[in-house]
Length: 183
Image 1 (cartoon, rainbow, N blue to C red):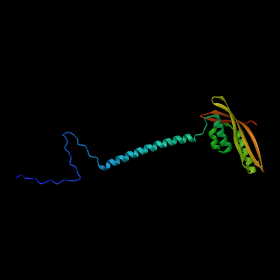
Image 2: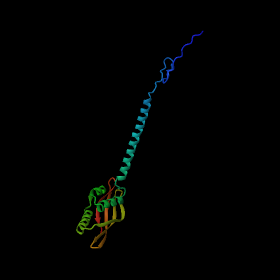
Image 3: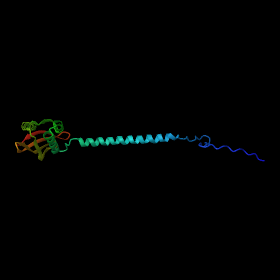
Image 4: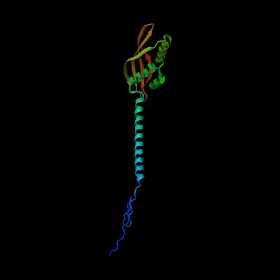
């Protein structure tokens, strides 16, 4: 009779290694947690790059939106008048002024209006009207602007229209250098 060998018990959960040819390095098994870590690191790296790119785009857009508009002589004069006369913000108005300005006339004009408002305890309403510009050279221009003032006193509203001439120069964008009252 033949001899029978007892059956070897089957081990579960582990695959036996296969033999490889001599000189061939067998592939290494990747531990199960390592793939998850690799995926998380890649996802974090992509997220960081997207955030940095988004921050760069946001900075450029913010810089473009908040930069003062000095692209034309008209925009420089209108923005200067808005900041100086209407908002009365000298720091903002300074962004539209050249290196050596001669703006005593417009400063006196604003001081007279502020003094009138203080004495009457009533605000003056001002609006910037028509503007015409003549380019005298490539980097210098003259603009004539109409400014309307309405000031109330005792139920009576006084309306006056003043014309001003502003000299502008192109110093890394147009800037106001001189102001002269015409009327």
